[in-house]
Length: 220
Image (cartoon, rainbow, N blue to C red; front, side, top):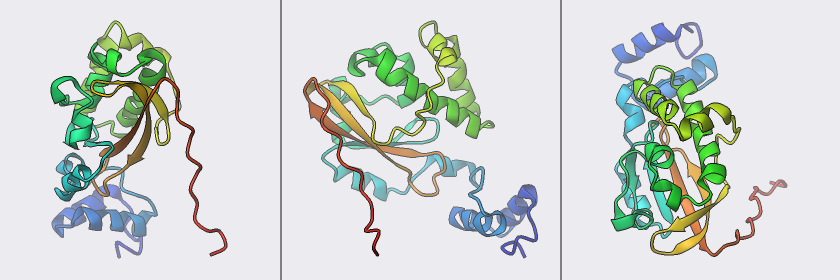
């Protein structure tokens, strides 16, 4: 009856899912069958805060910088290449707070005011809108608005660049010096709101040529 769409009340769907001890994957499947969309929130609050441990092994196997954060931008996992980007290899606990509120970030993130702050703040604005009941995100937004430097940028900037996939931005790498990173994003399955990034670093003052778009063979 649920999967046939006869019960479409989100509140009732949640009650039944909890009663039947659904997994997060079953919760997503229920919404797709009953309402034709992904659920607006995870069934269990901790879902958006944790990813399977196998992700760490995958990140460790990458030569490029790579990390995963939860939806509040708290660091969940990262590899050594990413840690090497920071002085003394010290990765911040919350990447969004570091990028927009920590003055040291403005040395690492070259051209911070133009290349980094507007698109990063667009991501924060989108997350606050999507997860309006997340107090941690709301508190982070309050910190941003109260800051004399980033607050006015957040208020004035309405960048549409919510998804940075394929972006190229200048970066002053602690060990490798100045260069550019190409950003490749991914989302770890049902960890709703979690996000992962690969940062492909190329040293030098100029951007590397963009790689061509990849597409499946349309003849198949």
